Amino acid sequence: MATYSDPPAETFRLSQLVNDTRYRSYTFQFLALIALFAAMAFLLSNLLSNLAAAGLNISYGFLAEPAGYDINQRLIEYDSQSSHLRAAIVGVLNTLLVAFLGCLMATLIGVVVGILRLSPNWLIRKLMSVYVEIFRNVPVLVWILIIMAIFTAVLPQPRDFRGESPEASMLFGMFAFTGRGFYAPLPVFGAGSAVVVGVFVASIGGIFAYRRYVKQKLFDEGKLLPVFWPSVALFFVPAILAYFAMGRPITMEYPELAGFNFQGGIFARNSLISLWFALSIYTAAFIAETVRAGILAISRGQTEAAASLGLRPGRIMNLVILPQALRVIIPPLISQYLNLTKNSSLAIAVGYMDLTGTLGGITLNQTGRAIECVLLLMLFYLTISLAISAVMNVYNNSVKLKER
Image 1 (cartoon, rainbow, N blue to C red):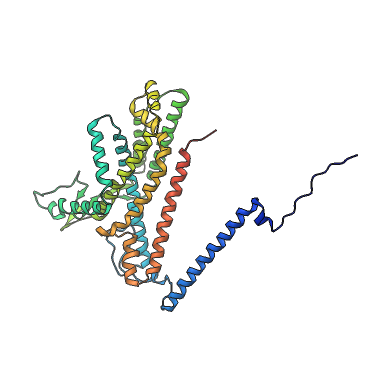
Image 2 (image 1 turned 120 degrees about the vertical axis):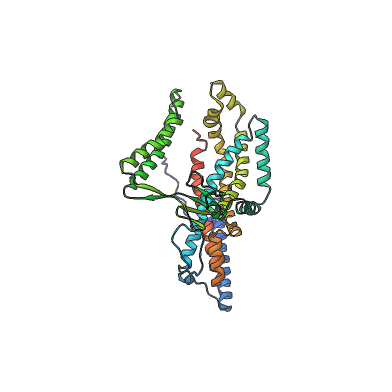
């Protein structure tokens, strides 16, 4: 009587790392990794040896020393006796501020221009084409200098707001646009203001939830609920009710002319405004082309099918075209956000003290720690670029086509 049993288990042999195709690729990758680490260790050892021979050593102790210079635009408290580390933090915050504002404004302008480039109106279509071709074919540094020069030369000085018949006047009595910078009211938060802010944030979340509900209702049952006015009501009504219910805990500090300059309120220097505006309109020209390409990638039959159902052009764009075009738009849009963030390093051209102007400029020149400062600059821009990519890739995965 014959008996059957499983074949004996194969034992692993070292020769399989080279001869067996199942393991050969891992072997070569491991060897390449070892070679890479060895090369990096050699280069680092060579760098340290050369620095030691030159009497230099890598140290970050200088970050605790007093900076000894002022920063004109800052989001946190800082003076000349603050440390180089705090000066670097101020530069980081200034860089993040202009990058965030620039990405937001560039996206809004780029989407609008990209859609209008496909407008059936010949004049609008050509005007948007002229905008795109002019702004994306001139270096962004040139636009930064031009806009800064226009702000400085055209806008009135604070002294022009004085007198019985002033040459300039404040907008709505709250905003002042001068050759030195822009002034706006500053909110002052008192006791109970956290509740108002919390209600306002919850209202914004409610707007997104309501719009998502409306869209799902439309897709499931074909019922079209109003969107605009309920969204406006959610944006204003809860926060206003909470504001009065808490006894008006938020007040406004308005800029007032005192002497030859304005005091109080929010002050944004022309260097910040010109950099923000130049980076936005420059990057928006590239985003507009990305949006236009994404829309053209969608079959025209989608538009015709939606129109045959009775949808208006605005709803066709919002509900049919743009959701599909996002799959094409988002990947190159990430690159534009990264470019805008790195282009913000040109801020020193107009005197805006970002990280390149503080840590990579004055601090580097005062301390002579070029290697340390450059390494920190590289680490910051690498970190912020990877963070932007990670966030946008999460959003890209949420809008990509889900296959069954």
